[in-house]
Image 1 (cartoon, one colour):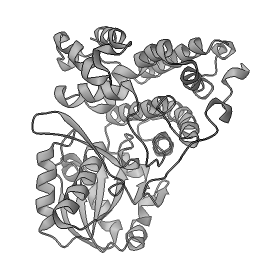
Image 2 (spheres, helix red, strand yellow):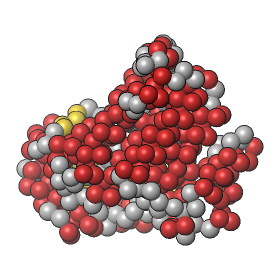
Image 3 (cartoon, one colour):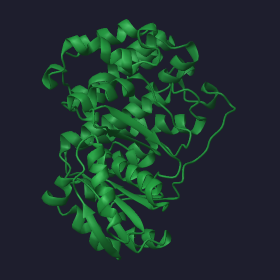
Image 4 (spheres, helix red, strand yellow):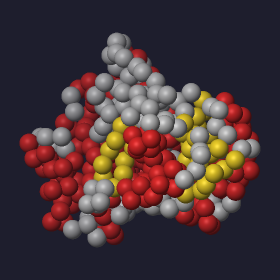
Length: 384
């Protein structure tokens, strides 16, 4: 193995700033839902308002399991949160919340209901002056529960991001038992979303050293566990390992900002064209790594290449050139997507090729002036 890619703190600056979010407690493990009542007591929540999606509420027993485990009054279950968290859904949830005497919110599901719950807390405080605590229970691997940011779709169909240190999860329960009703393609594709976090943490500006290190560990965990989940969708231990990987991919970081181009292009593709965010990462991640390997400064490329020992065990580890190592990271991701049967195209989602230039212009901070602009436009053509 080349010494130039052995994971080391020397690959990142040995000085920086790290600030955790308001997250204070994480219960993890198969069966950890049993800790919910204690978590709610810990945060003095006795009347919980549940926010979730329709499928979980009507097609599974997950919400009933949560209600039973809560051990407190459930004031209401708002189950109308749709994909990409439309703002109208959030507004309806706030109006229903106002009709209760809730003193906390339970968000159950994937990224959309959890993001919606964060938005509900933010706008509810703006309107009432009351700040509610959020307890998140994810059933996918998108890791929305780990951040203080939330994305929603406005009335014009555009994805809007909002960030507030006050509205993140105060506690999280990671129990793979609750994920068993999640369709495996959704589970696996959101796992690629978590892998996207791992990759783009490596070159995110000012990412703290421990965040990058944990993201590398998470990448290896996700590579192994997602393959195991693909082979056996009911392997609850493999699903629990995947949940741990998602957790480590977005470690508590109050200063978390935009991650990178795979995410930003995904935001431009997701809501406007009704593409799930997990699938967006399946489409963009591997090819984004190729572009980044070409254009990033040497230090950021070295960070990107540092993922390789965690996700590959073949002879490519003997390569000394870090840009070639970064290309090998892209190849490993592409192989994983093939193994998980997650290859897809923009044609399947009827994204017009005439929109490609505008998608990339809006995705990159400097638009057409970005030196990577043409490469990313070509990227969209390659996945059409």
